[in-house]
Length: 388
Ligand SMILES: Nc1nc2c(c(=O)[nH]1)N[C@H]1C(S)=C(S)[C@@H](COP(=O)(O)O)O[C@H]1N2
Ligand SMILES: [Mo]
Image 1 (cartoon, rainbow, N blue to C red):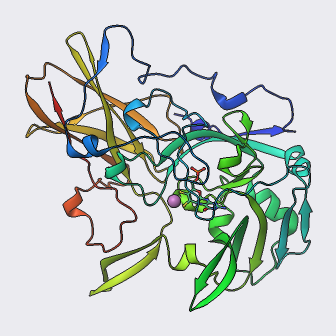
Image 2 (image 1 turned 135 degrees about the vertical axis):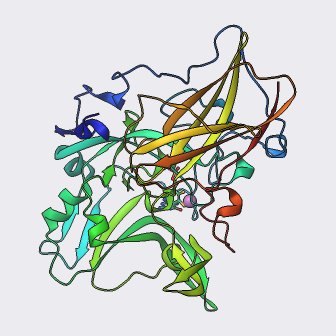
Image 3 (image 1 turned 180 degrees about the horizontal axis):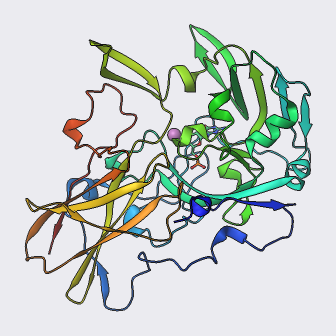
């Protein structure tokens, strides 16, 4: 595969009215995950997680998760793409919208939405999940979309980062009162990136999602998209980018989305906190489809963009067997896969998947995960039960 094509990054001059690559959807049909055809049926899971699972439609200011058993498209529809927001969903007016770039820059910027839309833009397929996604939700805090907007690096280059700057803070329009050390203070949602992480050429400021203006719930009119990172990095309702020479220590960098785990630090066993950053290598089964006497197990992979070596499926105590990766997958999209399950015997079965990347990282079982106190970053293998 041509690595240039891998992320389907395309530089387009002028964003308005091209329509040429709208949503990137015309490039290939949706392979391997079609809607059910006549005579096909979903084999219901019989595990506890499936029995406890509940789905509900989108409601304002609440978390939304998709029913991963119903994934039928390469792109998640904007209405079913999961939603997480900690301070509600602010309404930002497109006409009065400004993006400010401030701090240690040669030229502070104050950009309107049309300034952002009329420069060079890229479009890119990026899938991500919440760092708090869990097997209890059948990993429903997940989505895959085609995003469009200028690169972050082009905006930062326009501003000119000064020597000595260390960190870039992304402030959003959603503000809440937080009690910190006994005092109520107004805090905006914010996250930060080191200069090096921020300057990755794939980071973008998206004003479009799956060919539509960025929907209100997903951060209208502009959000940061950091491909290969957990959802929390993708600041919605972005209003200010601030360059500074100190670390940013807000709630979502220093207190929440912080994993506490046991680790070996230079030969010493320690409890270590880390801020949630790049996506851990993870696969999961989402559905089993019966078509006549054929059975297919289907699932997804999310990771940091490292190419994959294999996805494998194990049935009961059998050997690991290779699944097929969907040729539609791109570097930062979710990676869909499917496995032909030939002649399963009738009765109860345990099925599980694991993914390996080209650097030799193998998705661990839940038991092999580091000992953790926090629930963030669950990426262990997810065994499922079905009855044939
Ligand atoms: N402004 C703002 N951006 C935010 C958040 C938020 O609370 N406020 N939540 C973050 C988290 S924790 C996640 S998982 C993703 C979810 O993005 P989505 O709702 O578009 O799926 O948005 C991130 N960006
Ligand atoms: Mo999240």
